[in-house]
Amino acid sequence: MVRDKRLKVHHSVAKRGNSALVVVHPSVLDRQKGWLIMGTQRFACALGRSGTTRRKREGDGATPVFTFPLRRILWRQDRISRPISKLPIRAIRNNDGWCDAVGDRNYNRRVDLPYPASHEDMFRTDVLYDLVVELGWNDHPRRQGHGSAIFMHIARDGLKPTEGCVALSKADARKILARLTPKTLLRVMG
Figure 1 (cartoon, helix red, strand yellow):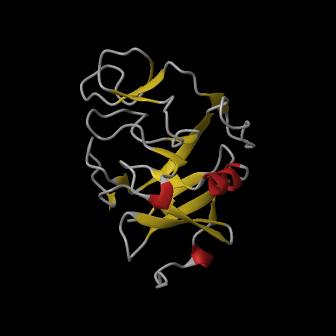
Figure 2 (cartoon, rainbow, N blue to C red):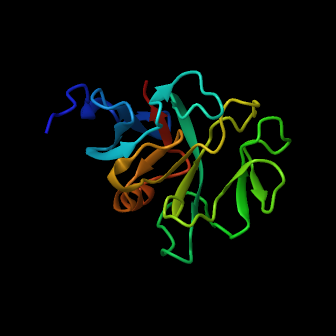
């Protein structure tokens, strides 16, 4: 196995004021994968199918290079136990959606389904949204077309790429969620 030599664990978690900083480093070997570094631990993660970008656009398949505040955790209470975390937690309901329709007044917001414009179904049949961290991307203020529904969530088998999110195994996600606080920031490096 070839190791990603660019990774510097000792610089990847720092205090920023009163905020803990968790860092995602893209792999130099595969732009669709990376390493989430928290303290002295590193966790393999999936990134967008187009890697990372500093110029996020709706539908580009890239994970934004950005320092994200963590808004809240969403979880499927019908499938898994309530996660342990200091972040606000809300159960996903079967009528939860997330609007991704550029031009819609609810672009990049949670919506009630059925919804007439393009949206993601948060109550998915697969396991990807069994645990979700809503990341503060393009929400205050919202800019039309600059990307929506950027989350940290459960990865597909084999860490297959996302549509622009950061994804982890369910076991790793649970370990990480237990250590997050409302002051934690997630930085995706370019």
